[in-house]
Image (cartoon, rainbow, N blue to C red; front, side, top):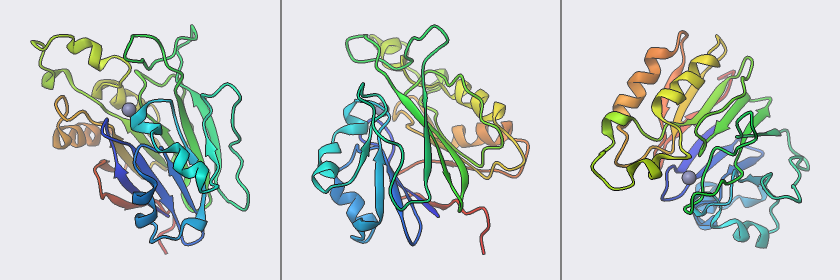
Length: 239
Ligand SMILES: [Zn+2]
């Protein structure tokens, strides 16, 4: 199974997990047409779209999937939505990005809190994959995880503290240090891939972030920084 990155960051998030038979879309922050092209117009293989929270860079194009009859899974909506898909080997669990007091760890522009979920995605080809973004941290630990896609939004060394409200823009996002703690907490011999996602254009540096992540990992794990067009194999067994 392949991971295809169509977009990662505040200008629009969208990822595809795809093998010959099926595909799962994570986030609807880019036009459906871009997903269609990436799938060579084989849209029948899409089992569902998972959306973490109700912000445009993650959800803007949800209706295009609804119009195409594709299930859209949005655990942040009060009526809930199913995480079970017909004729699919994907198994998905959602987890809350809340702290222990129940505070959501992502924010709206007005400072109010925004429900935001992460996903644990399982498939026989890949084992388990954790997807976490737009949260200040993740309080859960995942045993024996095979792949991690985790936000590493900013590092204070790249933040211009002279800009007004700079702290406000960082709120609700994960720092590199927090991402590294999350990754090392979940590090294990079966961890194949770590993909750092949703970097800030101004407050991050892909080469530095990749190097720092490699330094905290103990085993033979590949580290990537997500960018448009990145494609990686997630297969546990490459043959
Ligand atoms: Zn976002």
